[in-house]
Length: 487
Image 1 (cartoon, rainbow, N blue to C red):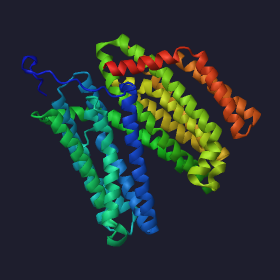
Image 2: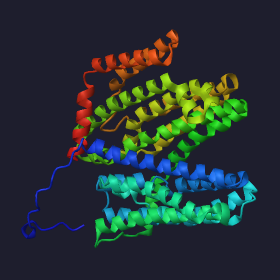
Image 3: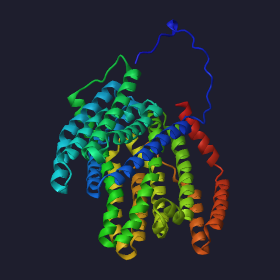
Image 4: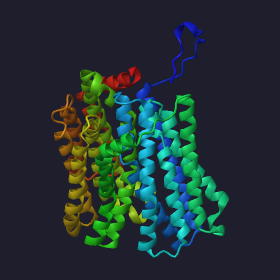
């Protein structure tokens, strides 16, 4: 990237300042909006498919989508986060890192895509054409050119966040135009390929505009080193995915179909909400990675502020859904799922805890402790599966929800413990007042058994009181916004 010479440059005309809440909040809203629109487009696409295809065809599509999701995790292998860290910490030139990620992911695609397609064709005994799975496997070759991590490293969150929105929007439009209900279910896979290519082109075009006349630097030895470094982070992502999706199978094994439906619906909603936790840390990670090597005292202030802010955001979210859980389940899934409200009300606290644990987890990534992060995720997955089976056999879906909360606590405890020895560690004292407020609200509402309206009123008063007691909260939010805006 060539910098202009000051002596040859002409003064730019003054630009009209746009309204801004600070880069932290601006970028968060950009990324969150992208995630929201992508999920809306995805929901519309699959809701339409469910009405247009036969049950058998739709089941085959869901299987192929699952295949693609597993393949995406295998191909990304944590390379994006390692790439962001390398660029942010100036370990390697941006073009060398870009080349390493592209080459590493392409190598994995060549290995993984055919294996996944063969496995699913052999294991599922699907009546759908084999081409459905093979074409979905082809779509994986677009993943090496998904450069959202590259724009994340350069604080270009608008470009990074729009890629997935574009993909799901193109997927929806392609489905409507190709009409798989008339032309064959294979055209669902064709739509996926078109959407994946559209996203890849988006990142490649903006990448060219950003880095021209430079281009990625490729090295076999360097890309292999990248894969070795990111392997444990990729394994963490895979184990984390297992921790999210295995509990449904555990409940199905230990309880009945009704309990499985309660837990499955509740977990689907919690997983969707946890997307915003990922967006927050995706937004903040480049700053964490830079300050890890150039200003430990500034990073200490950033993490301390983040601990307090994420604690309060999590507690407010958890309390709202605890109060209105039955109503939320009824509105989203129908009247038959209203009894699942208590399950959802418990399970949402696992998301709150995982949000709070992110400060330690992302410090581990910035501090090159991928093995420690993997250990934390293994503890979570083991607890969720082991305790989930034990508790759900006794309490059904509610027991599995309790196991997920315990697993999230284990994840947080191990991740925080493994930050020992780093120059910066999360200051857990920022969680005390939010945690005490949450406990007081949950205990009070459980004992009083109020209707939703008065329960919401009491919870609001108690939340406001807790925030007033925590006088450092406004300063923490301001420090976080200032740190990102000044970066």
